[in-house]
Amino acid sequence: MESRSEYPFSHPARSRLPPWLRATRNPQFRKVWAVATLPHFGYWFCSIAFQWLIAQKTGNDPIALGVLFFFMLVPILLLSIPAGVLADRIDRRSILASCQIATVTIGLTMAILLWRGEPELWVVMTCAFAVGAVHSIAIPSSAALVANSVPAKDLSSAVPLQVIGMNVARMLGPAFAGAIIFFGGTAGSLLSYAAMGIIGLLIIATVPRLQAPHIAAHASSFLLQAREGMRHARESPPSALALLIVGVSSLFGASYLAQLPVLAANSSDSTAAFMFLTSAGGFGALISVILVATRSLGRPSTTSAAVMLLVMGAVVTMLGHGPSLAIEMVLVAIAGGLQFGIMTTCNRVIQQVVSDTHRGRVMSLFTMTWGGFVPLGGLWLGILISTAGLPIAFVINGVIAMSFAALILRPGVQRSGEAALQL
Image 1 (cartoon, rainbow, N blue to C red):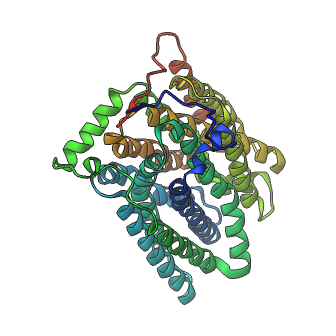
Image 2 (image 1 turned 90 degrees about the vertical axis):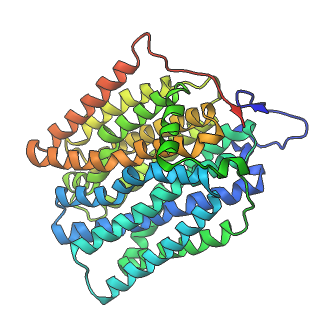
Image 3 (image 1 turned 135 degrees about the vertical axis):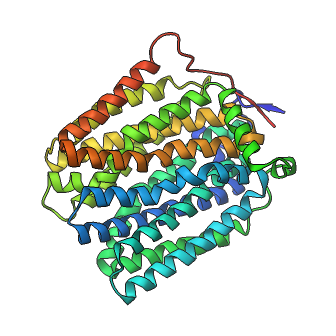
């Protein structure tokens, strides 16, 4: 067995790649990375298309946009834990292959509906829920398979690279989707989503079995295995604290993502403002994740994530005050950078301290707190905006995030732990 706390950055037989790129030497990691990244491009193609349809039909109504965000992300809240149990119970490649097939089916179905005429709001919401469901089932398996594709000493490289792929998709996906919608309509964007599923299916078919057989087969019930995953997270500090930090950042920090069309309309009359803000957030996130990835890895600690949450709360308080589009883009870029800096740091901490026998289930908790809480936060923020106004709503969220971060950073809180052994 090999300790995950050992990360030698140089060896005579190793390539000359910088430490944070070590995982790319493994051909199986490159395949799994592609399969994990492509759905994020497809997700943005769907998200932008659906938001565009809802914004056009409702005149940028914040409640309608919040409901859409809720339908796209609430499956993460509902399905992440069962998906994590599956990821520890059966071959993770089979789960990902099934998700690619579902992606193709949903993309083609929605494109056909659009060609036949403008769909009703409930149809868009239903398809958004289906997209979110597929995404939710795939994430724990892809996260666990990324860890399976590299030796333990390269895990500190593999996790940030996975998140970098996600942020490349977040930065370029909206721009590509906007161009596709402009030239080929919303149906073209959804066909691109289906195409991502076909490519992912072809790639995953070439990946060999990576997880140990004793991890893939469990006789106990789903409920018992889910409880074991929660217990393992509590008993592997600081993974439980990392999950709390991610959850608060999603509820009161990243919930601004549900209201990007409202922020865009509040800061500019340009129809392209929404695309600019989305791409700015992706750019900030990408830079942040690269900075986290290139930072030397020591003892697993959530201190830097708590500090980032404190700063993110301050940025959120400023988002709703209607500055110029340029200033709003800077703020969204900083918020996006902090959000994914928190996510990457906590992801890497959790992957370091948990056992692979429980990895899928603990990562499902991470997925739930990261993505599953965002729709709840989006609905909460939409209601706040409608009742208290845009500026006050963002101030309330920002103050809550800062208060929680200050609570975590107080002396006496255990924010670090020991790396687990690779099983």
